Image (cartoon, rainbow over all chains, first blue to last red; front, side, top):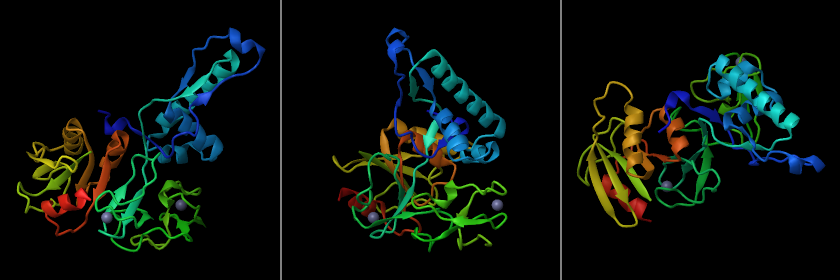
Length: 192
Length: 105
Ligand SMILES: [Zn+2]
Ligand SMILES: [Zn+2]
């Protein structure tokens, strides 16, 4: 069983399993792929696709800044090696968990997550009711945080606001000013 | 598909315990075969590591869902990595028997 301390958070698995080189020489090259770990993929995605700095990205993956820098450096080295040596890249493995989202059942009132993210939730896993809604932050407060489709993410630390992105829980965003985790504006306990 | 329920007692009339990891009994229930087992929680009084210990116990019984009134935030990464589903029933007066009936549907 994995240990909690060494698990790195990955928001979403990559859409592909890897890459293959092409060109006339590729048939003569070793088919042995370079293995990019899920946490290395995520580090690259956060820094160079979502354009977060290392501090912000380390918060998103729930690792220390030095650990993040090490993961990121390893990702770049592996990709460089695959490019230069004409190797395939497989994206797999690593000490990660894919952060699951929360739902609420309108029938029995329970909250539940969806760890099998490939399968869409169709009904409540407890009572079977099909009336379910996405839900942010269970445990944070009792009512009023069923997810609405129009709202603003706010930084509970410095008050920075940004438009909420559809389908991305506010808590998956990091404040670009002070790197605190964002919350939904008006969340109880949040002073902004 | 086995389900664990974090119970405060060892009868069908018991209710949900106030916590997951330190609950009195785990009820492991299979809605398909209707087989059930009450397991006294051996981790109840552990000083630390009680969350992972309880998860490990349930994982060894091939549990895929857990019903509890509260989990504690630190447990979610571990359960996500094992693909065990969390079902949170807060402040519920339901008995273990009533929860089993819900799961039968
Ligand atoms: Zn329900
Ligand atoms: Zn801020």
